Amino acid sequence: MITINKYVWAKESDEVRKKILHRAGTDISQLVSVVQPICEAVKTRGDDALVEFTAKFDNAVIKKNQIAVTPAEFEEARTSLDDKAKEVIRYASGNIWRFHETQKVEPIWMMEVDKGVIAGEKTTPITDVALYIPRGRGSFPSVLLMLGNPAVVAGVPRIIVITPPNEQGKIDPAILFAADLLGIKEIYKVGGAQAIAAVAYGTETVPKCSKVIGPGNAYVTAAKRYLMGAIDPGVPAGPSESIILTDEFADPHKAALDMMIEAEHGSDSVALLVTHSEQVANAVEQHLQHLVETIKSDQRRKFVTDVYRTYGGIVITANLNESINFVNDYAPEHMEVMVRDPFGALQKINNAGEILLGDCTPITMCNFLMGPNAILPTGQNAKTSSSVSIHDFQKRSSIGYVTAEGFERVRDFAASFADIEGFETHAKAVRER
Image 1: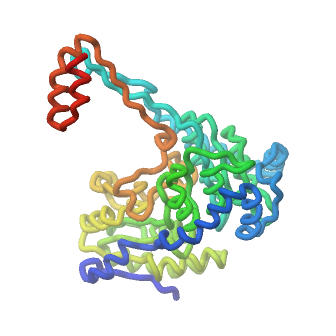
Image 2 (image 1 turned 90 degrees about the vertical axis):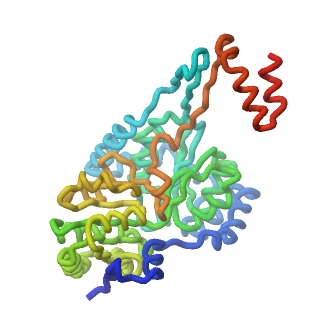
Image 3 (image 1 turned 180 degrees about the horizontal axis):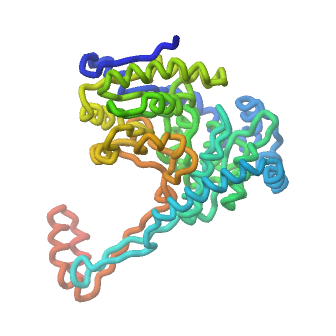
């Protein structure tokens, strides 16, 4: 029997509620002092430091001239990867590409806000970006697709990839194939805090970049924080988290299956069932007891069981509205809506990285191939942030144009506003023109 936390929300103390809502998460500030010497070593010693830290942290011995992936390694990936894997990657990439194509906006738009007063915006891609692809607990070509597709669609001129090598000093062929499919040719065998430092400062081999984006472990997150002044670190990503929202009509077997999806990412992940049906809660608990025993990987089984007794479990509410209120307070990364009227519930859910409707839309679908981006805000950041999109790879410039006629219409307003705020030369620039 495994331990599964069960909470009755109305009866829990403020302390317990705070613990559940806070969930897992390392105090990154404590790790900044750990990554600081790593980052400074990369800044001063460049490739030599990358080689040293790759051996120390990734157990991979590579030479300086092996940091960059070669054309021969791309070709080896194309020939070694089986046809089924290639088919799946192509299919997923096509869906992800089509979804992100819809996010495009007009490169330039303008409007007349008053007669002779024109305002608008110009949208341009950022000049370069580094995509961080983690490796720690597995290979993640899906992350490459989720970052690479919007970056390419956005029109970023230079896209590079940084990712840790395996112990043989190689990059997973699925990642190389996915990158090659998108036309991304610059891949560097470096991960962890040293990778973030490499793209923040630049080394003899790894180029300095304007922005780095992609999920990583706590050390990667700490390095992004430390190097914030040297590079745009994007939105930080924490441990995986999910909520399965059900009512009395939900299939407990399907709900139990889906509760294990994000839990297998690691012991610090979160997997919650939130329901007002005690009958469904009990049934899901029974299914979980059986399903966990069917997980073949000892490591994945440990992750799942750890989650249920720490940051995961079952939350029982008074009614569906209270369940939805819990969801909005929690602001989960992933959430599934398994209720009789999922589209009705959708109208009330405001805070979630992704909202998946019905019992045929497990998180698996969006994680890999539905099209919407699976790089999502965690740690309650879904209250203010969104999933990765092409907009993460673009910037907007405001545009203004005033005709001579328009200037005469508004000059007094502008000068008077400058007077209100006490800016003498602002006013002079329009009064004495």
